[in-house]
Length: 106
Image (tube, rainbow, N blue to C red):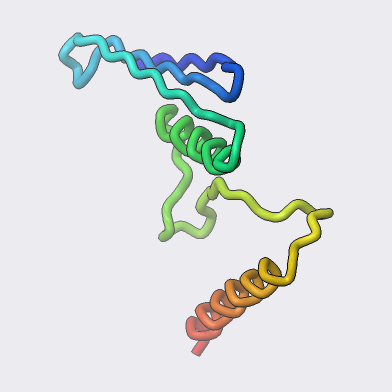
């Protein structure tokens, strides 16, 4: 059986994964992963933690072939004020998506 334990740390979270029957052979396996939630990569590490937790739990999130794939990502907050460079990049990304969807119609 796989057991997952999560403990708070000063600057993030420590995830312990215990498996008492690796590959059905009765061997024990322990994994400890530290996720740092401070600094420049805080949001990236939070997303990584959530994605790995979903995978460890064996949850089905769908695939790119499904009509409803669950995605874990970050986006601008509703009240966030982006700068000109960020706005231009967002417009380019959206135009690229529109081009893709328009090509699917034709």
